[in-house]
Amino acid sequence: MIKGVIFDLDGVIVSTDELHYQGWKYMADSEGIYFDRQINERLRGVSRMESLSIILEKASKTYTDAQKEALATLKNDYYKELLATTLSPADILPGVLNVLSGLKAAGIKIAIGSSSKNTPTILKQIGLDKTFDAVSDGNNITNSKPDPEVFLIAAEWLGLKPEDCLVVEDAEAGVTAAKAGGMKALAVGSAATDDRADLAAADLSLINVEQMINL
Ligand code: B16
Ligand code: MG
Image 1: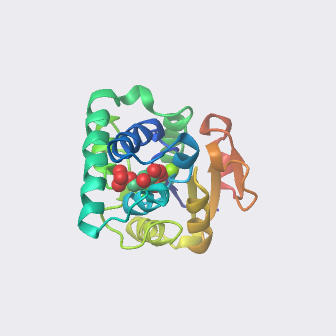
Image 2: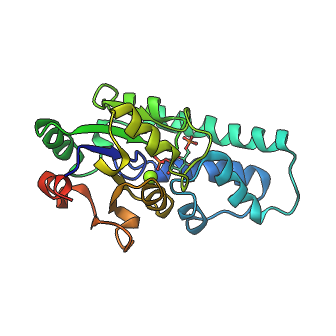
């Protein structure tokens, strides 16, 4: 019986993939580095600096740490501008609000477990900044997914043991992290075919709260 559900943010609660893509594309074009949507898929659930390392695999020169910081900032400033001008509650993914209210009604604790340092901004912008019992994100971790740290901290902040928690993820790295942390995993979106998941669906509108709790 599940006592707490930890939701990944990007790709589970709201889809910011396209905005991340636009931000990285802006940075890559300014440096003349090849970058496409297929490479962007590899950045799902991965931290900002690790994402940059993946993009720089296509670069024809090497960058110092200070230059890498500047490139990450260039992307993030552009991405934050896109968040501020385009993201709204209408971008909350299908089934999310029903699942959240159903879990609350059933007395199940809910948390966020995201790699993103922009989590507080995103939650505020989509009107869910007061919804979760705990928010663990890129600002409070030293190791990002596939390390389980972000989920273990979320479970601890909910006052629950990892084995009593279910993680909802859209990224392979996130499913790996959930399993490494001793939690159950519900895979959605691009992770829906991951056979390590305890439950899978294209999106949360296809899942009911009983299925989640009785895992
Ligand atoms: P930021 P999640 C992840 O969020 C994104 O999927 C990934 O593409 C991004 O690089 C990472 O957050 C860091 O984001 O640059 O905003 O700190 O899926 O773990 O909610
Ligand atoms: Mg994600």
